[in-house]
Length: 448
Image 1 (cartoon, rainbow, N blue to C red):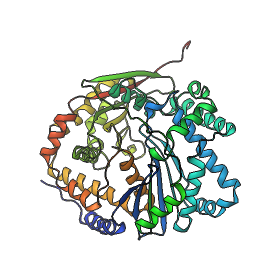
Image 2 (cartoon, one colour; image 1 turned 30 degrees about the horizontal axis):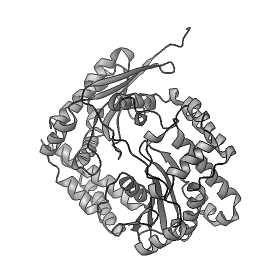
Image 3 (cartoon, rainbow, N blue to C red; image 1 turned 135 degrees about the vertical axis):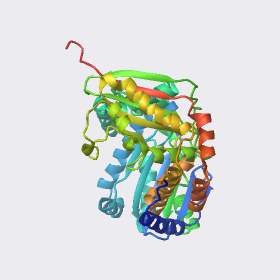
Image 4 (cartoon, rainbow, N blue to C red; image 1 turned 90 degrees about the vertical axis):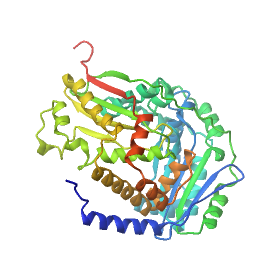
């Protein structure tokens, strides 16, 4: 018997679709004379401006390890110093303090900064980015501050078992390349980076020619571009950053390590997906929604939960979920992966139970109502992104720095709706034939 999607759910979705479709005007992209790519998205439904600044500078340039992250932390500290000490930015500081803080992130494929502010302060925010982020001048005190922050990240990694297991999975999938290692390097690698090396790197790569800025604001596109040109148009272009081609060699591979701080085994099992822009990537996003959530397959599979050998009462699953699907994110090497915690003696049982779900997707064993619900969930998620200038700027920025072209909400929804079970099987045959595993096992400290 086919289960229908609740009418209330469809009503909420219809409202979201209507708002999202009318929230933003068509997106335009302009490249300034210095190579800076400007993505302008008029968004009359909000008085807030969302800004995404991304640098197409990948992990392959992290020599020594953590170079990109250290400079990014230095620039974060410099921006905070400017906001605290420069009266020029006092109105902007008040707006940022009252709203969302700026977000600084280091991805394997790029660096980015995100911020939202009231639209009257947009010009001031762009000038802050110019002074704080594009300058190649390095301050030793701020660089040392960045080293300490990154050392904390590295030292805390053993306590973040899921994160460490994910790194093992990436290494199994990609091999021993920079794009599989932690983006924050090691205390030893970052300690060896001199101010001169950091300055040379920033002067070469963290410049306009490698940058994309996305502005979502209640302004016409030409006014957005004019504001960006006024603030950033005279920046140096820098040197084009090379990008390594990430190849996944076929074969089933695992990487295993020990962790003295956990009493459980942790495992990540995953498969590669097509790059963003390929319809197969959207298929991968659909597969995520088939597996994840309260209505997804994983939490409804009592046999899977039993195979983890944790003896958890089902009433506790709302508080502690020992299995979850990792979000399918846009990257040069996207993937669908499942994380689980299990008894150390149940690793192989857990591995096979997770793999069974991946195999079923590869073979197209999907009920019509499952596929329909996954489509609605994916369209719903995309609609929510469109509603807020900040999340929309981030979404458009991720597409732009990875070399894609933005599609309208209607185009994206149509792409999702037309996916069939045959499309899923075709993607499965091309990409889900081999899987990669990261495993962490409990380990006693040496000498105990």
